[in-house]
Length: 114
Length: 112
Image 1: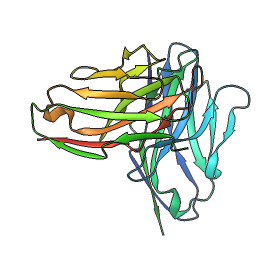
Image 2 (image 1 turned 180 degrees about the horizontal axis):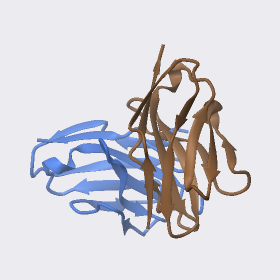
Image 3 (image 1 turned 90 degrees about the vertical axis):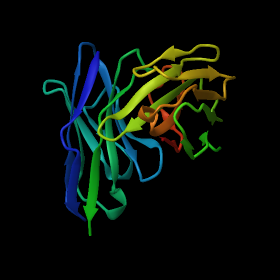
């Protein structure tokens, strides 16, 4: 079994400031990790994923995340946010070899303040 | 390509009524999924279909049935709606052994 913990339900940040959205996971097997973004009244879309290789993963819209196996974390970062980044962000985990079994976190609402 | 489409976008039901949520994808994906999204609970998997002709229960299947009509379409049926099924329902699809899921725009269901 696996689980995902998103430590912050809401994160307000001023425009052009940096942001970090935190995600920790728990699993008894090796996993793949994802961040999805949901804009208001839309479905989720993939922001970035970690499958293997470099632990620093770059995604769309200037976001990046770092996989830290020892701390079982996959925090999402952006050095300078825009108003358009206002959305809900979901961390997700899937066991390797179990692509159907994705577990999502409860989401973090990022509010960018002008 | 339209991607993943869902109908209807909104629905209000009375307790005990039935309805079917429709989902279709045009990406030739083998796998399809139904999730529900509730405040403070993230997305929870209701049912999934790894390939045409197969369906499996997810985390919260009680009160739902599904049909994989063909490779493109995967429907979710509520036989006797309950207020606890008030939620936003998302359909998604993916290729086999590919971990990225593509989501539809959702159906907002209210059961009174």
